[in-house]
Length: 148
Image (cartoon, rainbow, N blue to C red; front, side):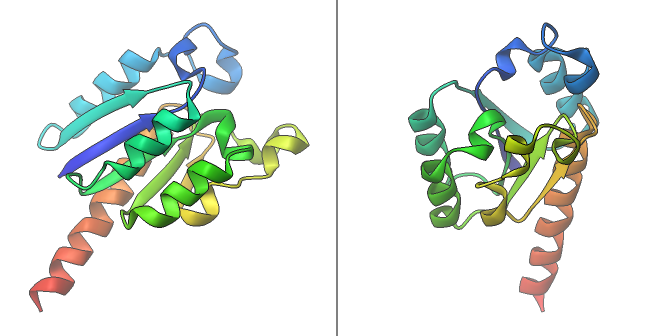
């Protein structure tokens, strides 16, 4: 599979941020973990603190079979990213390192996840691994359905 992994604002600071919420790994370490766990798949990693760059990345994702998206704080505020997800036609799994349902009230509003295929939250770097696993299962099911 060709999978685009998009990371939003402040995820470049992983390893320096609250380790109890986000874990001890840096973003580069998470990327390596994903590649090691799924060596047969082709990953492209993208991180931006810019809402428009994330929208552009989603809009330009036609060459990918699916997307893993951690929109960071934009998940609570970005109608633009939500609309890009909705228009993409791609299967998108949203992931969050922290358990957003146990955090501050403002984090419990998720604008983006309602337009994704689903989301995984609270398992630190393993949220990404679970997201990729689910995306692959969805792709396999679609392939089997198309073969019938």
